[in-house]
Image 1: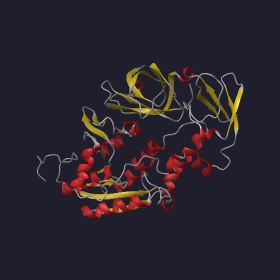
Image 2: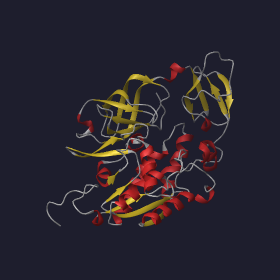
Image 3: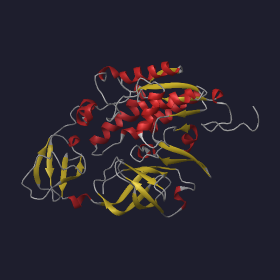
Image 4: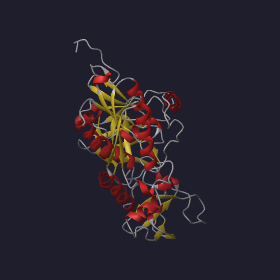
Length: 379
């Protein structure tokens, strides 16, 4: 190999055919395009699809990843493009690392984000280790996020298409993982570009709808899944106001989320009311006016920091934060308590902040992801 060998598109100083890349394939259009594109460029592509739960019960379900249909679709893409494809049974790991915590979090009155835990504990941990066992130089995914080289190494940046950006779901990616990961779709300007590439490669999934639901939650019915996992979890209880006066009854706090207004089943209270807190010990749903939802101070733990200097090397960081995936970043002051704990002070209050959600940090331009943490108690 000549010393002046230029870097290939994945950043390695060798020819594509000498570069092995494991592609995490969900069976959807995004990861299929990544695998097809790298195969066309001549890389030694190995497609891997994870079976994350009993897909026999999910075959009739549309709009979710990793079901039996999706495994079949990923295999067809591999056959079309002529690269190896494997299906790995990760059901036990997924149940232990994601589903059990999801159920426990809801029972504790939290609002979990299982897709983050799946990336953190399954895809970017167990699958990444498997990719290394396969002697792959790197692992590629179809996530819409960008990996850019900075002065101190790889950096995580939001996708070019803000509407598709998945940085909120990838904040817990560590620096070590980021060194090994690649995200070939992050620079695209729209999902239409991705679908156009799928058509160009002749992929059978070019027109496949995007997955919208959490993969193990059919039709978005969280309560039904939790009742199945935790029998008796839908015990009834009281709906109370901020003073503790009983204003109604509920059929299980797992049916409610902080910030919820519709479907409370109570009337005659005059002004609109919202769920402002959940008390799993007393099995109470607490309601109040919208202003009771406003939060300025947000406690965080399990912080993953991707900045260039140590997180707790400063008394405070001026950043932008995103507390829900669907809301834009907003200015905040981040005050470290330790290397993994902090408090965020929002410069303007946010409604509906709930334990179990993620708080993701961004740099001055709202583009570079500086990490994030988990909200762990109410306001």
